[in-house]
Length: 440
Image (cartoon, rainbow, N blue to C red; front, side, top):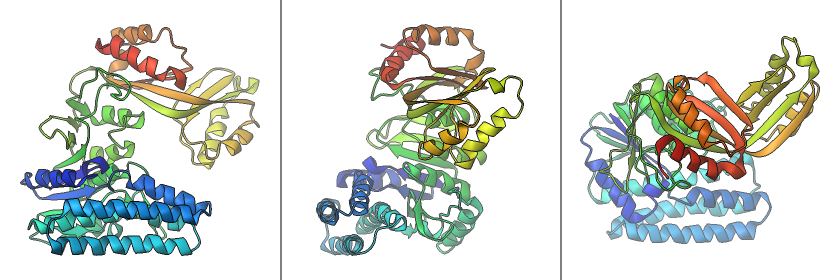
């Protein structure tokens, strides 16, 4: 069985949803299709939630009305028969009645998660309505009946597998299933989600749960590129990556793939293929347990980084100091991206600053603390690059005019990471594209 995940831009217009149906029907193997919300919907639902949280109910009502018009027009373009349009209208009515009701009740975080789930619930039901209109047998698998996370927001894979297997067993002769990406239930049984980009994660978890032959991630770009095409003009898609290389790139800023979506596929050794719905004939990028040779594969950038420096003369010959520092971050469940140390100071980076004030206050018990915002991590990724002197020489030569705040080398054989001020990001990416790939 194959898993085929389609992002918001792939289903964002009626004609694109039609194209997705053709791609699915061209695949002879049994499949589970994972859909995101229509492009722009989740952002709009976030706006509705924000307006309600701030008490602006009239503003929320206007946003809901505008979104309703968008879905009415979408259904008109998607469907042709009167019967299918009536069914779609009932689906849209049901979900927008919920959005109307929330205008009259107290706002809460649980309600916000319910609001954010509406996009995927709508897209999957409308897509199934279209498939039924063109006489394609399909079963809608509600993700809220099998996708679970624990109290730490981690997926409960054994439960996902057992619940999904039981659902699939009810349809032994069915070859096509559709489900929602992104949404799930938490440890309290409430509607929750896998955070932004979570539909990739859903696809990978489902792939692991059913031991899929392949997980396909369909987006609007022809695979993972060697650099950020939004910043650098001359980039090219990478034909093959190892799981380790892809995980490094996804974590450090390659937007095409959700960082967490690699580990379930890697753990069960399921190939992941990144493909382009706008250019389905393109090869895309294949991710497996094999690297396609040594050398630099790509450069990625992760914005929104905060650097923290703890300086203390008490570090000198003091064992246990780093443990105490790490315990502060563990207490506030704040991951660390990079770290460098000296005899009198330790510098590290984080990308979550929700608890920064508390973290800084507790760290001050161990020394002086300096905080720098607006930083960017530049990651140079490739198989065994840390042992290749020519690559390192070219990298540092390309970045010579740019001040480097931190360097992480040797933690992974596939990644060299650099911290710079975000104002130098575009200059750094272009310089590396020329220095490492010979492309202006």
